[in-house]
Amino acid sequence: MTTASAQGKINLVFQVGALSNGYHEVRSVYQAIDLAETVTVRESNSWEIEVHGEVPNLELVPRDESNIVVRAAVELARSAGITNPQPMKFTIQKRIPVAGGMAGGSADAAAALVALNEHWCLGKSDAELAEVGAKLGADVPFALLGGTALGTGSGTQLTKLSDNPTLHILLIFSEFALSTKDVFQAFDSIRPAGDELAADLEENYSNRIGENSLLPAALKLRPDLKSVLELDLGIQGGFLSGSGPTVWFSTPDHAVVEQAQQRARSLGYRSVLTQTSSLGARLS
Image (cartoon, rainbow, N blue to C red; front, side, top):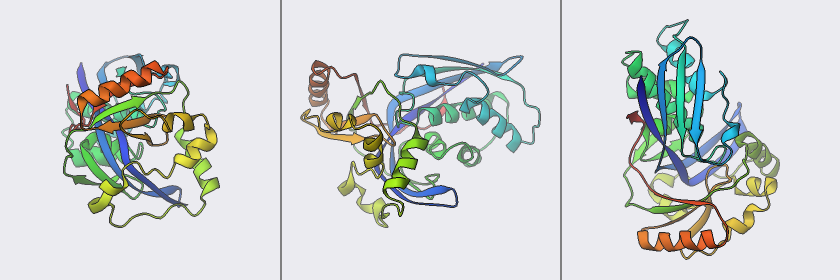
């Protein structure tokens, strides 16, 4: 039995260009947060998925071989020349909303890759795991890396950035999910030419905090998000996380963010406090 963890993320900035050759070119500043998914692997007679957690839309997590952790196992085995890998049971502890724009599935994949690399004694390097992860989803390499990073290309080409001073973050969860695929399709219908990608984002992203090209598309699909984004909680925000629907607010002051959460709860919103993290995927 082997266990690993990986962090969820927010996008401090998320710029999306036009669709070309099957993917969107993006420029994104990823920021890991102190909410982690934990994946435990053990041998089994067949591929099994067990999921625990108290997060919105937990029922949407696949319990069969379509789950990204099984796909991660198959892809990792293939990269090691293993054509018939040992079936595994995965126990996933979820703390990140499902289909919430915070890369919970990608964190599951990253944790599974780290756990299996250890359990199967493969000895893959971080770079090799990231190469496998890129085949599973655009956010998986960042979930392996963690901290703060600039993502380019499809988001998988990463440049590690210096860690920021700690930000305390208030997340407002939604009880409905937003499919990343649906949001990108809506984006293409609204902005077929895509948005302009800033060439100087690495140096000047602090002036663009909260920019998200997918915001109009998410609002097209879920107009009710507007009221959450416009909440006045006395701190910076609200900003859409990834493709949504999770909305985030931030402040360097822990006492102030606690007051903001009390205000959000008094208005009936489901929320969680967290903070920025420098951690990437690792054995637990």
